[in-house]
Amino acid sequence: MSSLSFLPHSVSSVSGHKRKHEKNHKKSSKRIKRSEGGRGNSTHAYTHSVSESHHVFLNLETRRFYCLPDDYEILDGSLEDITYLLNPTFSTPEILALDNYSKMVRAYNGLTYYPGVVGLNNIKANDYCNVILQMLSHISPLRNYFLDIKNFENLPSVSGDQMMLLVQRFSELIRKLWNPRNFKTHVSPHEFLQAVVLCSKKRFQITEQGDAIEFLSWLVNAIDKALRIKKIPCPRGAVNKTYKSIVSSTLRGKMRMYSRKIMPVNMTDEEKASLADSPEYMTSISDINFFYLTCDLPPPPLYLDEFKENIIPQVSLATLLSKFNGVTEKEYKTHRDSTLRRFELRRLPPYLILYMKRFVKNIFTLEKNPTIVNFPIRSIDFGELLAPEFRAKHRHTTYDLIANIVHDGPPTPGSGTHRIHLVHRGTGKWFELQDLHVSEVLPQMIPLSETLIQVWAVNKSIPNPSFVEPVKVIDEEIGEETKPEVKTDENEECEEIKKEETMDTDNNKPQD
Image 1 (cartoon, rainbow, N blue to C red):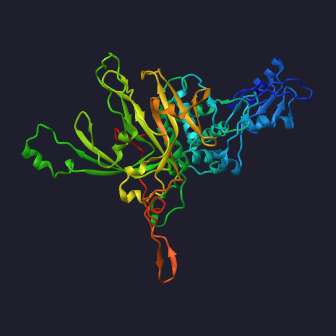
Image 2: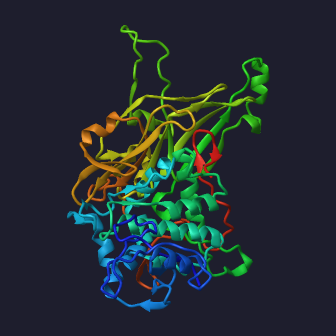
Image 3: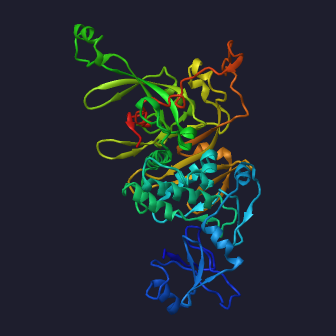
């Protein structure tokens, strides 16, 4: 017998604490709780039912109710709200209507809330995980995919059962966040975080403060890998290709990095001339897939102002993004040598994630950059970063902000907290979420905070004036229109696929 669950009727969070149900079934105010080991005479559930007079138990796998110690199944329609809370389900029309839904719903405890705008329990120090989960739950393609379990329940994954457990727990949490029939206006991520601890091999803990961008990088790479499925074997003995996952098609962009090693300053002109054409000092080109872009904040001023107070510098988002215009070069130093690099964006994803690098490690400690980033929350044209030939391939290049993660407090380990600003698309209102606390916020206040991570969604209502429609080719022999073959990931079905890595553009290391 699988584990059984019993919960109190007062209300509990969605994580597995269901509510106690008052029934007319010859039992008054029974409690439903949680136990392991089945419902036999020697189990904890049986002993608890006798000693505490808690008689209604729920099997979390079969979703059936039993009365102990009599051991018979309870069939009662009034318990359906508990089973729905355990496993919320959504139809396709319900999923497609979420972004336009503007009405508040009432929880069983009497409070009202917008589905999707609910708090997450901070078990001890997992607020860095909570903000990432809230952010991903508002990326519509990801949310819609995980709200329908048919999309992945029978998926032949290439990464093993352990990572599929992470996918299942992530789907459960997304469905509970968007559940219009919650018992309370908050949700517990406990089951999902347990899967995170297991799948990350204790790299991310519930009881220790962590780095939000490291967690985001690990999570999207892990889910992306788990959702890749093997394709039909290609002819000619080629290596099988895997389909793109919903994570890659939604978040992954492409850029090209140009690197050039700098010659030592103590070289003579003759030595520099002799090495100028050597492969070591020639410009190398590499194509990079990314899930987020790292924006380098300018260093804060060293001196105080005339009032002997610290100056809080400000910088525009456009200035930070100039790093990726294909022209701006930046020097990257190591203990051995220095390299000049420039980055050229080649493809923008539908949802673009930006990371403001606020934390810098020096020899002695970890420092936090307090620079304020100025940005509008709507209608930023990221197409200005693309070269003309690549901009012409994008039908839309204007983006709107949908999520903004903020870090407050010092950067020292165990210190500081995270909160997130989210837009509710159905009403256009902005909300600030910090663990269990949810409050409406003015959009003008969002750029005043120390932003850490942002998500920008493409605005399909504004066309790209530089977009060029693909030329249609007419086959004269058969008299039919044929689309020109464009070499993309989907067309390279029978080519050898190298391991894809997302790179941190600041240090050129894999993000996961």
